[in-house]
Image (cartoon, rainbow, N blue to C red; front, side, top):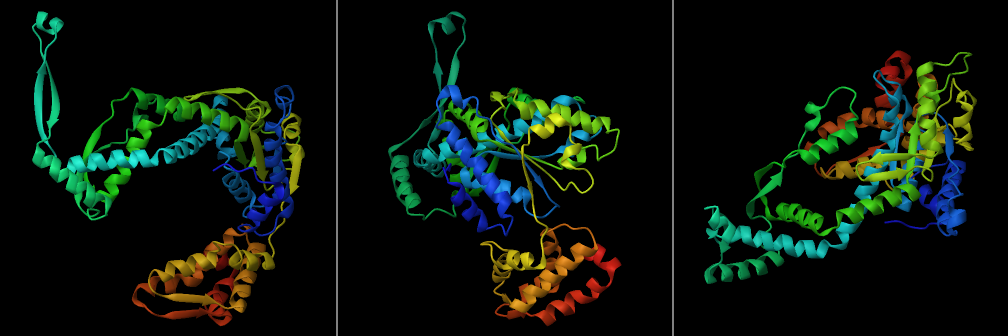
Length: 456
């Protein structure tokens, strides 16, 4: 659902899930609000106001992608992410950069389609339940011969299949409708026809644009269906989606999705530092070539998609990279100029890890607590244990590669491995994770630098 949130509201909501990085949050929040402000302008001025693209600078795991992704979700903006290094691969040709725009349009189409389908959900449910009733109490299938003057002249007749519903079947269906609406038939099994996913990739030739060509080939291939037996509750959802797709106007969805992607779309280009020349006098031709191919997309150009042409001029681009070796000034000047807003994200300290572990609504500790609760095992972490985990994460990041908050995932999996393995046989148990518990599981690994590089 799209919302016109103020910058203050956006940053407040981002604070619920992302610790620190206030400057980055403020800049993306202002960028999003400016897009809303632009839409309020008169047409002559609106076309002149282009987004101020952002370049995020900071090591991996500090929240660059998460800030952009969550902001897009908050505001209902289509979002796609691409690694710039993808375009330096063997066999790369310039037009491949357009795939990032096609991915954005696909995301936009999915968003708009879901919104439209929710609007017709009630009608789709009624149609799905009628189909279920027909499957649970089928009528007799008959064929009738239709003849028209032309067919008679050609000495041909066509047959049509129809369903004959007797009074007994009609009465049975009425009874079934009542049971269906009261939820009494949820576990009954029905056999329905479902579409089989087509894979035309085997037909493709090298060098063909994978995304667009695959969709084009799918359109020409006959749709295959196969029968599946499933409970009513599952069949209803499948049929409801099918009926909703029939009701929704596809052309209207596509037009609205293109417009949404043009005005609200966000493309996140990661690893920008890896296509810079790295401060050397002679830049890598392939990397500089990728920059020059990305440039027209960022500047504003028209890209053809299977849903129609899209103008990229008002899409918001967020570039990101660690820039340990290369600097933003190592990008070609034209591309630098297209990312006027620069923000450097802070490296995470031990105290940041403490907050990341405990404060967000879906923090890692809360996730593990919920997972073990499914086995009727409860766990709790003392404050000292959380501090110890945070300090170990910080130390390992300092001694090996700095992967930011992602280090916490590895450390917690190692810490709780034995408990997660044994939990299914510990129903009713409560386990308190203390500083001593953490030290007993991790200290030997942490003290062995070679081992910690592999394990943690």
